[in-house]
Image (cartoon, rainbow over all chains, first blue to last red; front, side):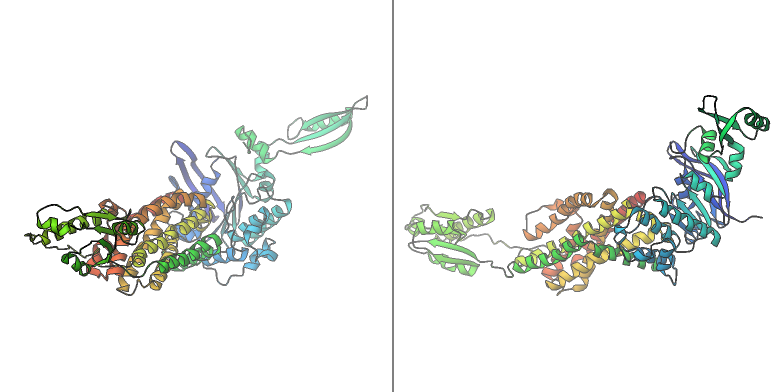
Length: 288
Length: 351
């Protein structure tokens, strides 16, 4: 039997007349990376807040590491790490002071801040005040802060949003190393490539509901459309585009016919992205 | 409640407070400034009323005036008397005509001119008129037949002379305590607006730990400064335990108000905008100590009245627990209500 790090049972939250999260159910296995995707207002942040004990569910319950979050909030919060989307560091403190503060709150002893800073490439700036940091450096420090208690579950909310490629890559490496260590990662992101690359499974949220939950590959198989993009030369020498949809009974004959009767110049395969699949399922884009 | 976490949070709050150069400067300079104000104020009380009298022939009864706490000077002419009152040498000038005694003896009314400085209180004007009439009655042999007795109910706060600088002590102590509202409210509002509180609340730290830590830091900062000030200005020479208790409750009241203000404020400017009216209201009761009789009973609805009253009575009149316990109780009640309300409002904002 699989041990689940996170169980959402009929989790519900509403603000007055607006249902933000509508009776959702899912489980995340220990050591799994779950990509949590959806447009703004889909209910992602509300779900994360309920899972991390920042908000009490109006209905249902969240179980983390076998404990009901509402009943064991302090115990649960001692074993999770949360990296927020918005920077919320103590800017007048140095990076080392920020990390030491949170290590003391978690009761981590002994604690070597420099070790955590080196994991996110900030070892040379530990004694600088955070207010002198760039956005990317602050975000990396936020990730480092979420790791100080060696959490069993790591919640990351848009950890690479708006960052330069080097910072994004550094954070992705940290996520993968955390998975290797055995941590469960709950990753909220708008970056479909990132979700595709890192996540074992992804959840699509739309208007408070889970509309899909599976591995990226299965979702692409189920909802996506693969095709060959071909450029052919016409009699006059001009190039024309052709498309052959894959995974249909006619695909082999269509390919054969193309190569027999046309002068093929280039062939590329095209695969659906998670964004395409989301649009396919919900009829709206992730950035709407 | 986890005291290890609370200790960590208090140390963080104090560290952040002392890193804010503006707030730190206001705090230290304020303390120094208040001490300077205190020490430049007169340290003694002169209760003698300076009176100039012009009288070609001074009636014997007027020769007893110095014994009544009045300082009498004889002036050569009415013109000089007018000038001396006008330039403030005397507060009151009495000009008796040459035929003053003669007219009294023949049953006529002599014309007596009284001169007062522009800022002479109404009470002194009335008192002087009464005094002259009384002396005239004595001179004509019509001694007053009514024996008037006086009884001050409670402690005689006006009758006991208190130097101006000591009257200032409650006002300055109030200032020191309530100026901390600014620093603490700013610290809390930043914690909420910059969402660092959110980061703290996903660790084992609870909302109660957070409020307790803020309370300890806020009360500590205000209390230590107020105690330091009172110790330097001699306000702890009598019944220091009562002064410590009063200042502690006052510091807690300031912390409660800081909770409330930070729930509404978003940045330092809005903290300032909310705090100034609150500070002005809170210092009103201390004006009653500076200028006795200047304010009426409505001032008792202001919580700081009970703080001022207790500090004033204990530091300036040596009152004991029995004299100030009601003020302490009411102040404590106000403090509990304000802290409770502050926590309620701020908690809603945090969540």
